[in-house]
Length: 103
Figure (cartoon, helix red, strand yellow):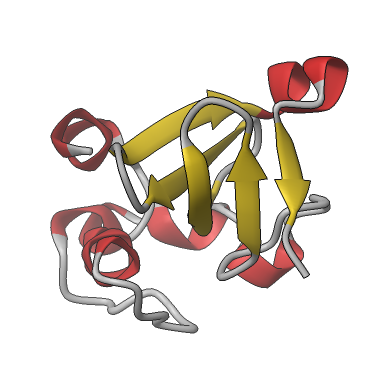
């Protein structure tokens, strides 16, 4: 997660709040990435076309229950109850059926 924070070109405040399970709908306008103008170039969390939107309860066969915390273009970050944060490639999730939605 720290590497993701360091490498993001999206709004850092949105990234941090997402880490703690909160959503900020618009970029903050105050962090370095907002000042550089890169935060506005990325779609918001609701703009991603994904079967696992933010806050979706999911299940992984090895890691158990979790909740989607962050969605990016090609990856999803999930907070699992037992093993913590894991970032998974969306292509691998879909190709291998790594996650299923909990009801």
